Image (tube, rainbow, N blue to C red; front, side, top):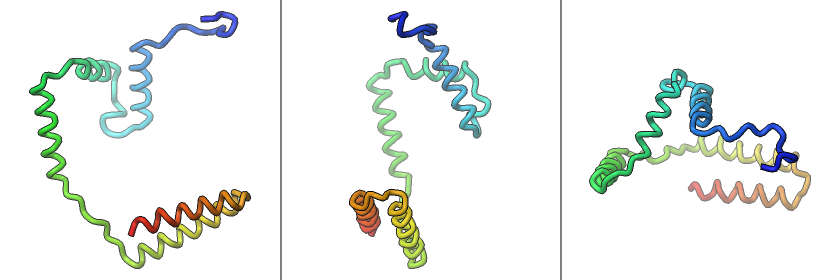
Length: 123
């Protein structure tokens, strides 16, 4: 590197630095399996996912993924008049906030129209 432009460069972090970042981020996220994560777990996971899968292993993954998707039941949204009323009130409040904070009338009108169009697409 150009030493005149970069004074304090100590080199790239490498895999250990990245593993440390992953572990630190997991701990910050928190929750089960994240709070107590250690570097060795991350390294094992990276090593496991570097191996090349055989065609048979890939087929098994696709098959199990397809079976899982078939098992998931998607329930339709349960809209009521009360929920629509709340949604339209929130839409109106949002439009008013946009008009208040963005004094460029043309841009704020365009943005609020886009919000209305998206809400209408939900029906």
